[in-house]
Length: 183
Image 1 (tube, helix red, strand yellow):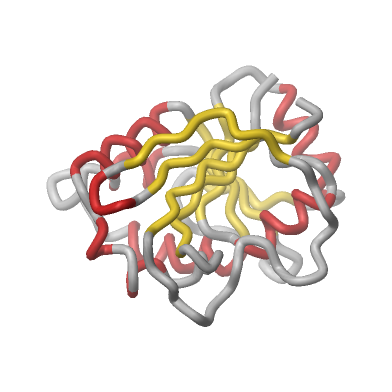
Image 2 (cartoon, rainbow, N blue to C red):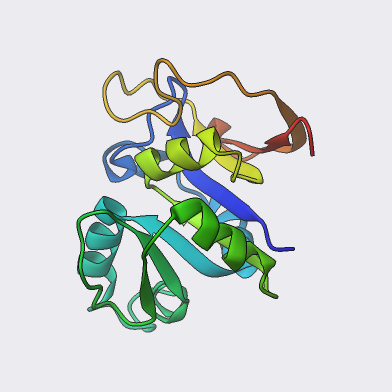
């Protein structure tokens, strides 16, 4: 069975919003390799509406020569969870309609690699409440951002996780992999 893996850059105070404003100072070849490995482990992306629109705007004009991640971003199948979009235009994108839990349960039962979620805080929070996140891959940066969307919002239901793997990367970034304690 496929896994849904939430993979995100995170500040020490739990902010995941706008990493382009705070994480670049911590970028390293080692972090690039870890992100590349996460991409290699997945063959589908799951995106919320906001992240889908931001990514589509940023990636559709990039070519492989400009950015090695462009091939993955543009050619990987993308599943979009949205209550407001009627269509999705970005190459290889499918709008999930109907009951999201049912749709994702069916998708997880199909053969393939991981289904990755990047960004999409509200989607991750919703899926976590429905016990649909199989793994968190967190790249925790040694910076306090102060404001912004957080991975775990106030009032979230308590969930026990177990640490599956950790590694300290260059510039003090921690690569952490957590799974539900019940797994």
